[in-house]
Each structure stands twice: as C-alpha cells, then as structure tokens.
Length: 114
Image (tube, rainbow, N blue to C red):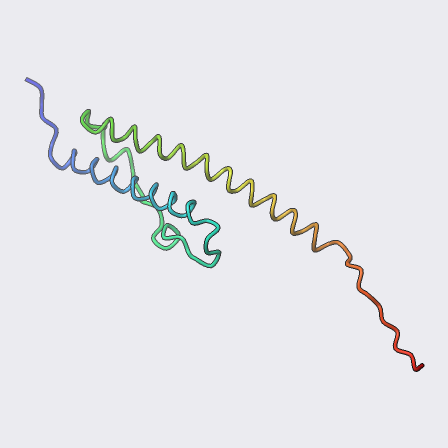
C-alpha cells in the first residue's frame, strides 16, 4: 500500500504553481503592452514576484507534473521574449545617445539694416 500525500502538501504545490502562473501572465501582459503606453506601470512591478522556497514544498506530486511543465514552457518563452525586448531597448538607447551627441547645424541669421 502506498502512502497518500497529505492534502496540505498537494495544496502547497497547487498554490505554488498558481503563483508562478500569475507571475508569467503578468510578464506576458507587460510584454504585450510594452509599446502601447510608456507611462503604464506593469502590474508585476507593483506586486512583485512570488517568493517560493522549493525545499519547503517537497517533491512535485505526479498529478501536477503536466501543469508544472506547462508553466516551465511559458517561463522559457517569456524569458526569450524579455531578451529580445531588452536587446531592442539597448539598441534604442544607443541610437538616442548617438543622436543627442551629434552637433546640429543651426541656421544663423544676420540682422542688418538695408
């Protein structure tokens, strides 16, 4: 006879995966609206990321494995999208810096009486 996992152990993993899903969804939302409103504060910046201690959760319940793999796949996709967004941001910063360093030719007018 195999021992049944405690309800609190399985519930802890359910809560942990839910928190991770909310984090991923918040970053996905931020990336989706990245260029729509520059003054918008992403929700993830306001609430922060979930603080999970995997050592306290114990082993992943077998019935949660598919859900955990799906969360991991979303996290990996978001990580790739963040790399692309950060690279584009650095390019924009370099362009803006190079444009601000250029001397602009300002027309000069000489006011003389005719």
